[in-house]
Length: 106
Image (tube, rainbow, N blue to C red; front, top):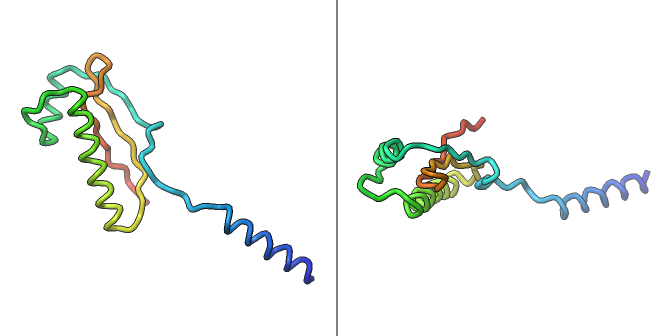
């Protein structure tokens, strides 16, 4: 019985130091790319508060950074991590806008 308890304790110790908690993060492998017209991208960018800002690499980066900062603020406030991904709107294959869609959490 002592050997069994010692073996169980050793196994528990090994599991505790080798298993790390699951981390939530930006899951780029789940990103979706959608080809849209300039007019559609402009309309959506205007809805997101990017009115008058030319569409291109900079708006894609800006929209990504704004949403990442918002997610980080929410995670810090709630003391949790949230898995998320982006829908990238593209024009001629070039990402112009990143949208983090809401995903229900249960």
